[in-house]
Image (cartoon, rainbow, N blue to C red; front, side, top):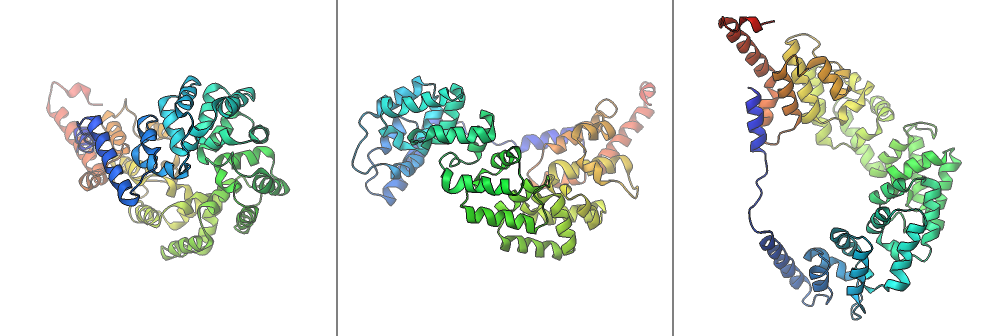
Amino acid sequence: MNKLFFLNALRKNTTTISSSSPGLLWFSAAASAADKTQTSSPKPHFMVEYLINSCGVPPEKAARASVHLPKAKPPSDPDSVLRFLRRAGFADADVTRLLSKEPRILYADVERTLRPKLALLLEMGLSQAEAIELVCHSPASLRMSDLRLRIEFWKSLLGANDSLLKACRRDNFLLSSNLAERIVPNVSLLRERGFLDAQIAHVVIKIPRLVTRNPESFAAAVGWVEELGFPASSGMFCQALHLVACNTREGFDTKLRFLKGLGWSESDVMSAVKKHPKMFNLTEENLRSKMDFFLREVGFEISSLVHCPVLLDYSLGRRLRPRYNVLRALKGDESQVARARDFFISDNDFLERYAQKEKDPELYEAYVAACAGYQDTETKEAVKNEPGLIKKRRQMKRSTRVSDPNKEHVIS
């Protein structure tokens, strides 16, 4: 199997794009959405057509968004709202995204509401681009009477504007969450646990939806993390918070039983979780396939995974198996083909040690192609068996060169 195979395989997996007219595709989607809307609601909201034709909102989103609009009262001058947004720097895509989330903005007064709110964001140190992004992620900001207070609070905690935007990208409701009833109590709890504001900011940016929970739920999450053995001083506390944010106790116990069924002891699981909490967010199928790879193919013991659980986080098709195949191609039947560090070192280090482009371009190209990923079963099987094929091809190539007297000089 050679480089040509990999290239052909990649071509086979290229998605065919329809050459149909975009206009026809849109018309078909619009018609389909209209049919669904008519079936579920014989009398669609009168603003649906405006959202589609003037604001670029897709038909299905327009139908969903219209639920939040007044049933009888039309906006006084929606065209003036669109003109204002576009003159303020909102691109068409921004307008579409904004009105898909918050169509009630079409009812807002430009001079009394929209212009002052955007001016306030600029006054508070956001650039035009940052203000537009913030509004698109948190459309409710254009309706907040205490917008200044909220921005001041988050900027004092998070610091840079970019940090606030990152958090808002992950949770559109961060800015609109109740400061007094939710945010301040939750932040205070972390401070009581000894967290510095920089650490709290890290938690907010990484897991904003956890910080916006009601205080009882948030306190329970923090308590669970401490039960798992993560003190507040631990650098893994934030990852552990992410673990409990994504799992229920029932789900955690189910995953624990699953791993015990694969040969782990409870102490093995807890030891691994303390090193790499995110392993618990992997699906059972994902864990099973990687366990099978490491134990059956690579020859690792469970203790190797307990010692270095981050190995379970890597892609089987795009990292683990391609690297193992390279090592097999180079080392053949050696008893210890791969070590744990061979899988977690950086790509550059791996290539430097085992597959340098200058020394072995064929092995390098096959490895890079395998890391690109494959989808169809036939190619997956070929990639799995590639080490022997690479080795065989290299031997054939070497033999050909030796048999040709004109090319003997290139043999090292």
